[in-house]
Image (cartoon, rainbow, N blue to C red):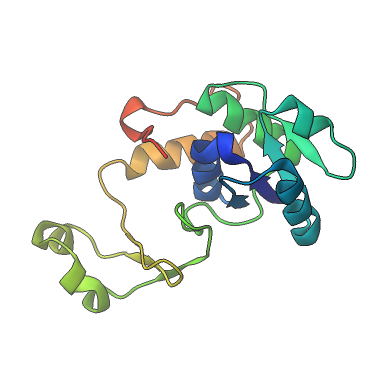
Amino acid sequence: MRLLADAMLGRLAKWLRIVGYDTAYVVDTDDFAVMRLARTEGRLVLTRDRALARRRGVRALLVESEVLQDQLCQVCAAVGPPPDAAFSRCPVCNHSLVQAPAELVAARLPLYVQRAHERFSLCAACDQLYWPGSHWRRMQSLVAELRNGAASATISPDIQDSD
């Protein structure tokens, strides 16, 4: 299931990508452009806009809650398990991540990160670099809960970063 989050759901889009959903995100776009993009790319629109969710000619899911973990649970329950592996998509731009050898990215890393980690992922589209930092286990726990359909999935406050 390919998703399209509207401008109100940037944090949700980021977390859906982390979990393993192909999630496009649009800002500063009117409803008609959102609908056109969703139809063109075969995406389900995620929105908090009741009027957009009711429009004909577009598949949409009205996201009910303002609370991120409730939003994640609602989407996961509505569309089923993520098609991609967790942590396989760039949370910033939605492209697939590739494994990057430590020697290839070493110049971009602080020395303590080079010493503490062996696995790195790189987004070829936006050049973001990722590694399993201190928040990794908490993120893995959340992903596992969501993939198992747990309505009690919670996002730790220290990983609830802004858009």
